[in-house]
Image (cartoon, rainbow, N blue to C red; front, side):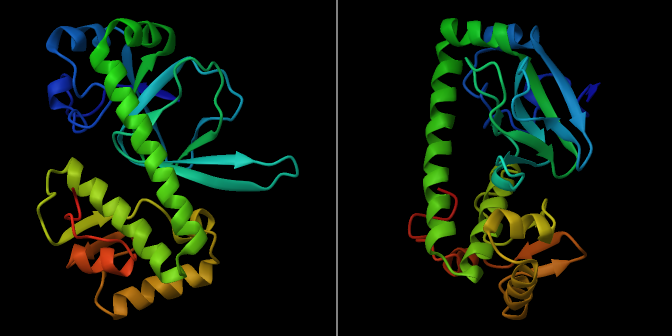
Length: 247
């Protein structure tokens, strides 16, 4: 692990995840308290942030990049059980050990808070406690939706669902939520996508090629993806977009 100063972030007001992170509702005096217990860490793609069972001395928000959550069974089989995208919270206050192995799937920067002082702030700072509760409930909703993706959707719908999730988060953080067309860098290899979605590598490649052929996505290089029409991508995912795709 490498301690670092996050690039281009002079204070919390410059943070790209400020309006989505656990500190989103904090007042200036509360941000000053967080400033005293925070530090930044960076990780290279493929580097392990923490192993399941490790002692957790910190909790954190993902500032940039993506990490995977994996769980290993007794016989050695490993399953990716979640993704951490920018503004997602890492760790669980009140728990001293990590429940999952966290691995950087791209260059990763995290804003870390020392766990014990952060737990004390939860008790004394309602803005943090309320925001953490909101994020926890959002995570629960996302987990339930992902059960539908894995259990009932076709391979094409699974790929489209994952792409739409990443595109939406990227749009929100870049404040392009009203745009119909979006472009983003895919943070996962096709091998990682196959593991996460429960598909073979060949199926992932075939379905991405099919979405490209049908004009649902445009591939620019190895990882850059252009979505000409987000509503069409959401339709391919089998989701209801009546309320607006970024509502």
